[in-house]
Image (cartoon, rainbow, N blue to C red; front, side, top):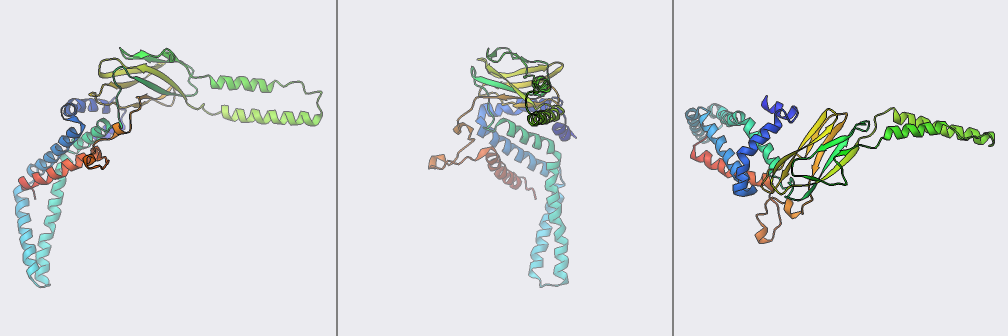
Length: 330
């Protein structure tokens, strides 16, 4: 139920508070260990937690005994010729494998929420494709506005941010529908064609009527969404700031991350079908090299990026098997 609410409800209800809580718990690992070290520590930690759950949430002693007896039956059956006795011994041993496999899913079920949410957090925080603004760096906010929205859009910039004078805080999209209606009015007021031959008069009238029909069909639909942009300069202090766009009673809030040691925030938020459709923070472009996560083979001349998912698996799998052996998990 929590995961369904996390993914289906609007972000401010559950997703945003959950991500902020995970920021408090997990981001210190990034600050102290770096992104690669943090991902490795989280992967190893989750592997250990999973094996501890498999060890203590199951009837461990019964599973171990069943596994040992099943192996013994399989060894004894291998010594026998094909026949009813061998078939019976293998049939007794066969269900044990399924039971141990089902037991391995118990910790995954118990820790499903933390496992999934941690994975979501890693994808939205440590991926080098996600960036933040450096102190004093320029960034922009891009809003998609419903084409029929006539009220102005007002940007409430966070404290310390400087809004470029070329992109004022209050902006409006061009009145496209009004301009087209004025154009339609002009088309319906024809020039005096009485001095032209009747053939040209008919042709002119037909052309005007066709244009008016096309324009009426276009005006009968919603106007295409328009874009508005604001350019801002980040403050000198690192942190997470909130910018708010106002469209009448509708508001959209964007969280802006400033500083290398600040966790990246969701860059885009959605509004609705009318007014503010969505808004997005655009940070300065970074070099391709800065988007690489980890290149373990670079010392030998191989420029291969393992990625955060690769680091996670490299840490998770060995720790899982090591803990499985130490805890004697069947």
